Structures are given as C-alpha cells and as structure tokens.
Image 1 (cartoon, rainbow, N blue to C red):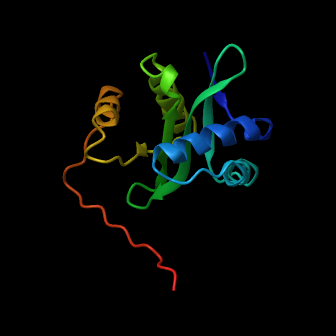
Image 2: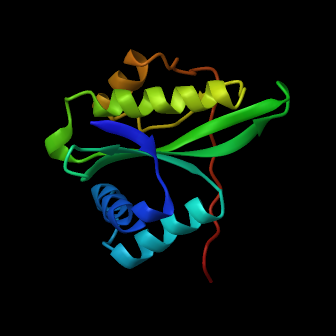
Length: 150
C-alpha cells in the first residue's frame, strides 16, 4: 500500500472513490459531479488530497484537507474534512496511514495543527481519531448556518 498526494492523473479513480464516500453519507450517486469536484480542488490548489494506492494501482482510500488559519495562533490550520477507505480495506491500517500523511503535511507547512469533526454516533471514527492522537474538544460548541434555496 502506497500513500501519496493525489494529482490530476488520479481524477477518474479518485472521483469514483469520492462518489462512494458521498453515497456512504446518504447522498445520491453523482460520479461525474464527484470527478469534477475533486478535479477542481486539485487544479485550483484548494485542498490537499492523499490517496491510498493498492499494489495494482487501485485507489482504496483518501483523506482531503482544506487550509484554514488560526488568527489567535497566527498560523495555518488544516481541516481534515474527508476520510474514506473502501470497506474491504478497512481494519488494515489504511486510515491510520492516511492520517499520518495529513500530520506530515501539518509539519511541513509549519501549521499549528489539524482539526476535524465527526458525529458523536460515529463510534469507529471517534475511536480512530483518539487512537491517532486527536484530542476531543468538549469545551466548545460548533454551530452551522446553511443557505436555504427559495
């Protein structure tokens, strides 16, 4: 298994994997939209995506990070927004390897760290994040505002 930064050459396979991720979260399948979305993130340098590539050049997982900034710390902060591993490759350390790549990105960009959110009911994810060194922030409330169509 190889962990590497995604490139535009990965858009087709990564788009398919990204669409599987979206379907996992109960979104309607949209392979073309998924390919366009990841292509734009890569070509416009709006995110950093690492992929887990199996020996046969099959992409089996990915992590996507978006750059943010911490005003109080006056440094870059990364948002780990998406992490997905194909079901048949779970439990093999792929998620941990992808998170390790994300941590290295934090170090090489001299950021102050990385943040993420996951549902309280995501038992596996919550265990994974604690296992890989993330600390649960129980001191803050997170709010969301959504644009409603008219």
